[in-house]
Length: 316
Image (cartoon, rainbow, N blue to C red; front, side, top):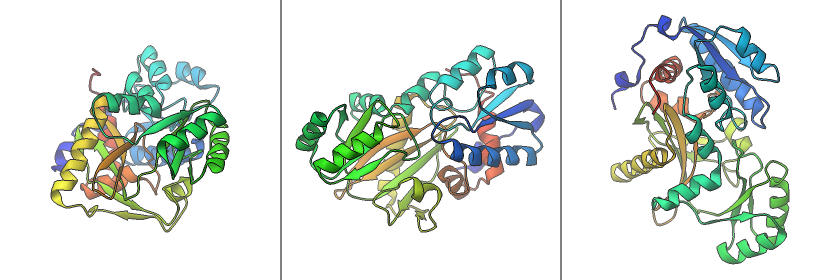
């Protein structure tokens, strides 16, 4: 990988006045505040004319009042990562970072992302949709245990739970319903987890994740000090190439642009299984895309400039 091809070659004046959009009102607000402030500090440190907007109820007024040449979206979850902010910015004629409306909306919907992957023959764990206790019993009979329960439109592992029996499944489904009217349950994949970042059409070095928790949950992602990250990821060259290729195909199927992160499990037989795509990954001190970028010889400032530079390119 040639890090020079990833770096922005543009003078910082080419970006104009950049609004860093963070915070918002989703369940991932606290993470977004940390990510957004890190991005804002890096851009300002590079000399970019950047300022921050904590996206709230007054955002439309801010959009009309502020001079904004382009937007750096660091909003995680609903309202920022699901296509709605992308649509608003397109209507306002403001270029922005990351994926467009369709890819953002699709990647935020775990069920429909899986359906797209399945239609293309890409491997993703067997699943069911839960809307009642009867659905829980049917899913248990069809999929077996253990299972992982997920709100279909949340990120950062919010509302997720690993379950080992029907009673726990019903409780987890009821808990997940507090976050989302649509709840998925997936077959549990026994084996290591990997996360793979894509930046400007290139696949960055994969990261192997390890945690003493039952799975890579919110605490393991953002708070714990005992989460393990391995780069190099420990796969042999052929398997790592297979993982990178699968991740690129997963993003291509969804239609991501600029940057994204794919989460993948590997079972005992060595088979990889796609979990989800994140179109606005975290940018905190615990976050994975900055870690992968460092392994590709890009520091944090170079990473945010590369993401911002991609917003100058026309969308397909």
